[in-house]
Length: 145
Image (cartoon, rainbow, N blue to C red; front, side, top):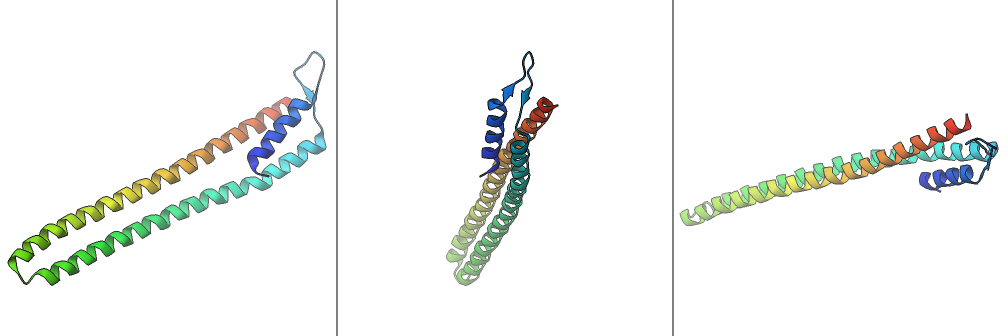
């Protein structure tokens, strides 16, 4: 069961609990409440591990994009050296080199931006989830007091 399911079950426990007359307070099964909180505590580190993995994966993708861009640049430079014999070929090679370098740089930037955006979206969702979980736990603790 994931953290969201556990939190929903916790909410259901509170919703299904008997209310105190003339009060907003409810009587909650302490044992079940403790079990749910323990399970949430045990599951939350998995969510954090997932966020760490996303960060590491983002770094790996950025490194791969950089390596691929460097390989493309190296390939372009080798092609230019090979074509340098003829003046007309040299002009064309210079044009192609510029195009390839521009394309490689654009590809690198696109990959970096897409990876950052994807990682940011995942981390934003995780942050929202953790905030909601924390808010719910705080509300429940407040209601219990």
